[in-house]
Image (cartoon, rainbow, N blue to C red):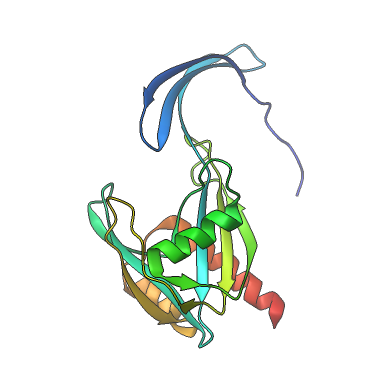
Length: 185
């Protein structure tokens, strides 16, 4: 692929517009090298992590919870915000325990993405946790109410297409997990 990249814009002014529990919103005034200027609105959030938990029987552990943005129930994999001072691996395994009660035999990073680089500053890291088993009780955050289910990995494509799995980061994580499994075989 030929690299014909556009130049970067310079941020000349940054104004915080709003501070919320999990993000802050800013107005960035930017200038292009050709002297065009514009205001752009950016949401700064801490990084996220999502975990693809696989049981010894080859099942994916999924969670279902109400999502306030879409105002719907959502099938997803465990995940959440990375707390200050925490790395993605520790945060992901913590979220796995808290949301599902499952713990892992082994885990590793399998990929990462920027959820929406047009307006978001954060990154999402994807982990695969293998040999997961239910070993502890779920421990929800104040506003969580999560149900757990198991999906045979061999049925994951059908599950995504037929069961309303529409969370883009879960779909991205499944893609990375499929690539991980292809390398193993």
